[in-house]
Image (cartoon, rainbow, N blue to C red; front, side, top):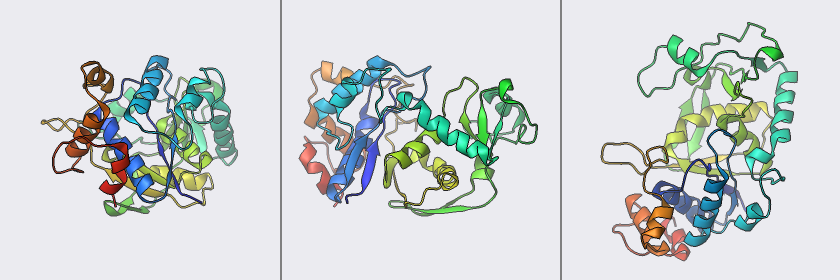
Length: 298
């Protein structure tokens, strides 16, 4: 059986070159080493995700030539919002609720009334540094009616793992982030929780993603262990595209989208080659076809 990875964009804006870099790694590595690609729409954040962005990213993937093996783009178009789709997070509330209930039955979760501002205000941290949740509500025994937010207890200890690109890693989730928020006070599932549950449900073997998510790995492995994951999970964290000042390309910074580049006359092979060059996968920018991606990683 082929191993499986996934491409999992969040429809909070239009895709840009940074997303193409991730897709090149995902499809290129999968095709080079006999894997398959699952497409997942990570729209757990109901305040920021938009259907128009989902429609646009599906269109961009088709235009660029990235064809998933599981979760074809047409399958999302055929399942409008409100209708079940196994790879659209907003349609899988029951899956997350069942996992949370199972954790709660083992006394591994608790109600948290702290806001993000509360944590940032009371926990000293440098600008841009992740504040560690200090466990304010861990033993408070708040009732379910006081808040929809839930945290999972992170026990002390080191989580070792190997990154296929960066080598051996060691992280201490309890020291990094403290007890993990899995549902916020608005009742929305967090990225850290939803991605672990989905990677188990979707039989993901290899996670290929940007280095900005490297720090999440240990806590996700800890949570997966609590959920009983037995199937080994491998990791490949690739470099990000950044501006000259070091800022990563992002939708929040309004970086030029694929949609805009297309409207300006760009063609798919040119954008693929540009992204591969900026990612250090080509010595110079040139037209690059989808069929050439595996050779970049062999």
